[in-house]
Image (cartoon, rainbow, N blue to C red; front, side, top):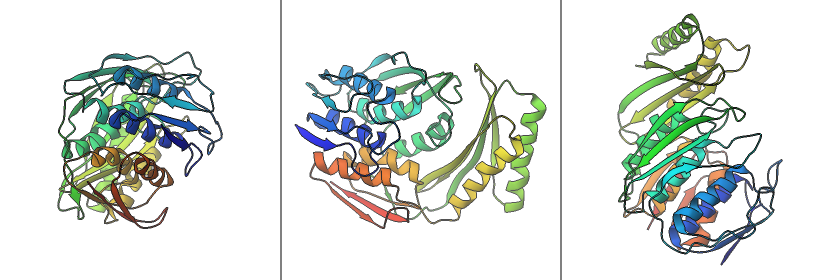
Length: 344
């Protein structure tokens, strides 16, 4: 049994996701105390509960005492990950989980299961400061494919925020993981923006697209803009700007709110993209999180540069080292640029 202090480092959900993922992949039991003590809402939340339940089905794990609000979480896997086909059902809660956070966590695990997996769930698909569908599709999965994980997502219904869940599915192929040495970006391969809207007038959408194209023209950035009008229970708008390089990827997002003009929304996402492009990093801080665990199980070494080492990422690195004797060298300080090397 590996014992972890859930208040270590960031003390949030990233630590729990890393610990449960490593337990499932290494077949080691883990007990986490002081769950989410670094946040304003301590205790097991709906995302932690659903992840543990899903991994319990995938690994035939025992989860004694698992309940929302618990201060301790115990996970005993009894077999290697197996293919999963079905829906991830969360308990009744006023706030739904973020669907993409959970699916992106499960993808590297079911990819090791030896057969195709199909996952479906309801939850937030677009939210502020969280993983969203367009970013995951355009940036996350493109980077994961470079390390050997091939998955296909489908958005069935948008969920803007946690109150009215959307619907999303993900098919994951069995994969052989490989490293990626991304010390320099290389040439720019793609640069795009996705404007996702629900129940908004065409004229409003056109203004957002026009503003994106105008800003890109001023900056001399070859930005291609696409519009996705998707079903939802409430009006909503979300803009994702992204780049794919020969060696790396990154992006920026912005979520619409009541009273915010769509031009301002487009400008927020575009300015975030420009700030990312002005760095020499090969992955943005959010993508670094998604690459860490696949890189730890790859057949070869991984190297990447990020413009900011987040406390969440550094906490996940600490978690990995509690499970396997892996060499992870992080050059740089928290909230500053960093070079990460992961050696088998």
